[in-house]
Image 1 (tube, rainbow, N blue to C red):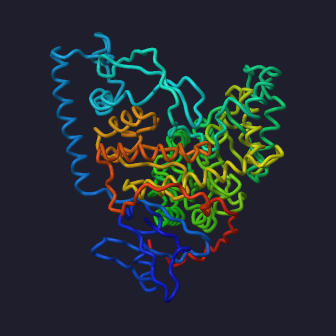
Image 2 (cartoon, rainbow, N blue to C red):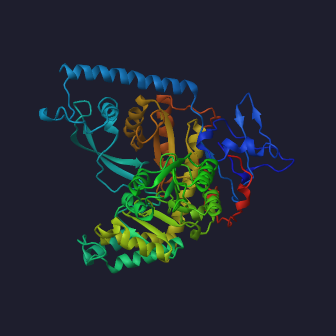
Image 3 (tube, helix red, strand yellow):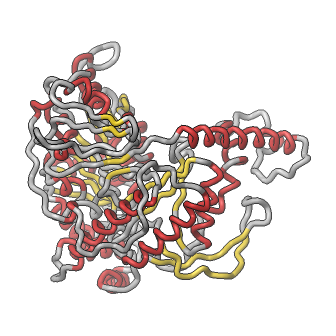
Length: 584
């Protein structure tokens, strides 16, 4: 666990010690702190508890603790995980041998006889992984839901008679499953209430489809209203909406940068950002996750050396980061990124897919969370698929930027307009968050989400699990590590009526499999306590409590506690001078 400068001790005070588990390569401050500031601050290490305390001088950028936890994988667990994958690989090759000689039946799709000499469509390892590892636990994914994916949901039961190659429905419905996997952060994925009523009315008036692009006959008054509201909500000059969140990144980045431009991308950026960067034709350089020293080193090299071979200055330098990283649960160190961006005169592309609505005292995302000026972000991207319970994405920025994208973005020129009911869902839910509906429901949901997040994370840590990410992030990864425990955890949780998402390779590093919980404002105290009780029970059954932290009995939730994320934050000033003497 690491601390920001806001938590550093003053002279004469004892340091608050942070438990074992620092993972330096995942942290933006640790690697060069000792080298840069050993004369100013002391590192306190207790050999018996293996605790580490770190602090830095970035106090001017943060006014509250910025604490993220990436506890180190226990050595025995890492060894057993590698052994597990090794055993599965050996048996995989054995089964492939049996399939080749038709001793074991092969269910996989094969090329036709006349295509035997063609180049394979899939890479050999990916095909091998799908056949022999993924198929063993395939039943944990693509489960059909037959209700609203709210705080609780209904699932259609299915079974397989051929080891997960095919499934058959039993006709039974598993009811009242607590939903811990959907991105329903503010609880707007619902079929009752003001949003559902407004959507029904607009559907009756406008219909469902538009059957045209925005540039032709698909530009409705509802689209104009939504984009003005989004710009107002974000505090930006203008905004533009798109029908698909993934395409918002992958189709718009190529419109902004191209050959002769440089993209500096976080190593854990979403696939849509990676695809957009590749499609742009720009040079891509990757910096370590949330590591500001790594980012600044790349910026310096880009300024000093310029383009390869010619050494001409780069046409543009674009820094691409996310607000909340959906697999790590970490929050971008936005104040430091903006300070670097200003100093080196680069552009900043911020993806707020998971953070918009889920962070900040007003639900305005990571910019609101840190109390920053939205205008310091050049390209502000987000999606409507999570906190707003709708579909699509948006890009906000200066008016000139949006007008440029309207005529140059493939997603704007060629894609069909957003469906009117989806647009109305966005408008109604956003007005609710802003309080323009005359109620405080939106603000209460934002506060409730922050409280639920802090409570759920604290209880998991006290139970002895290793969890990743920031204390205020509603994305909560719980580490499973071993391949056999991926499927076992998902199945055992569902047996106890808890629906969870388990994640493995290639979405994560091959030995860092995990379960990912998404907290919602719709979760009640009883739901969270029930989920925690079941998680603890399954954790004991599968021996998942790897953390060395002290465990406490599962206690009732305190009602009076409110996290710092739910309180108004003071503005954080920028001081570029703090970077002047940092070593590379």
